[in-house]
Length: 171
Image (spheres, rainbow, N blue to C red):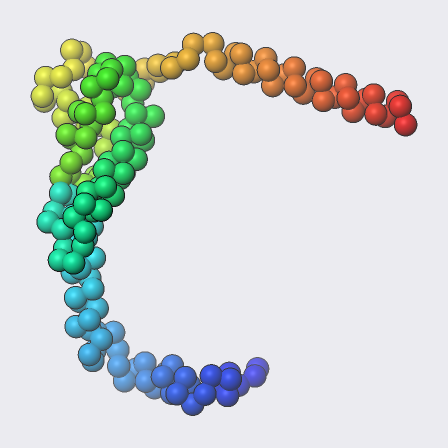
């Protein structure tokens, strides 16, 4: 195996030696304070983006709010796909209601499905659901789309097979 220390110089081999790693374990030395400060800054940034926390010092508040809105929009789209029954029940109010629910509330540990369940529960507590939503209900946003798409794919395949056969016979 070639000696890589020659390619990177003596400083590289000394800085990455096992003896140096054992001597300066994780959390030792001047780097631990910087790591802790970075961890606090990152936690503050995450809290500002997903939990309505105060923006960390030095960040553009306007840009943070734009990113916060984008993250909420992404969550809203996922919940809409998971719970089309809620979209159907709320209609045009779905987006505003979800934004009200999500602002200042981070996505739950259980993921998007738990987020959708929590949103439905939140709507129920507010009295916004005229009936208990059925999470198993399927709302077809474009009736007949699947059957039309299936026919189109089937016709396209048969046309392609016909062209292939014509090429075989014509050769």
